[in-house]
Length: 128
Image (cartoon, rainbow, N blue to C red; front, side, top):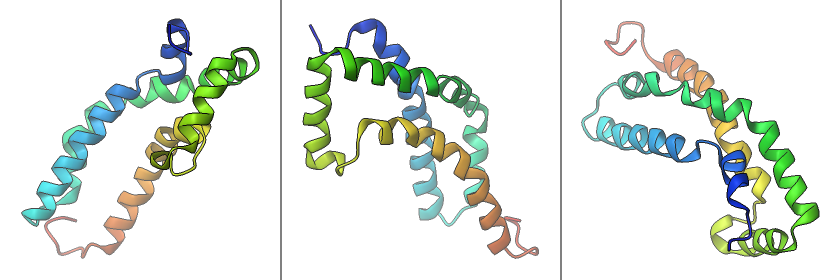
C-alpha cells in the first residue's frame, strides 16, 4: 500500500498528466520551430485548444493544498515520503507545495511571455 491513499491522488495531482502532455507537445514544437526558424506563436496556436485543461487544475489548487496539509498532519508515511523526495537532488530542494503551484504559475506567465515576444517582433515581420 502506498503512502498516499488512492482517493487523495486525484485531489492532489488532479490532471497533471494531461498538463505534462500539453507541455511536452508544446516543447517539442518549440524546438522544431527554433530548428526551422519558424514562428513561435504558431507553436502556441497548435496547443491553445488544450489550455482549458488548466481550468480543472487551477480551480482544484486549494483542495490540493488542503489535502497535502491534512496528510502532513495525519499520515506519518506521507510525511516521510515527502521528506525523502524533497531531499533528493532531482527535487532541487523544492518542497511539494512548490511543485504543485508550478502549473498555476506557468499558465499565468504565458500572456506575459507572448506580450514580450510581440514587443520584440518588428511590426513589418510576418510573425507580428
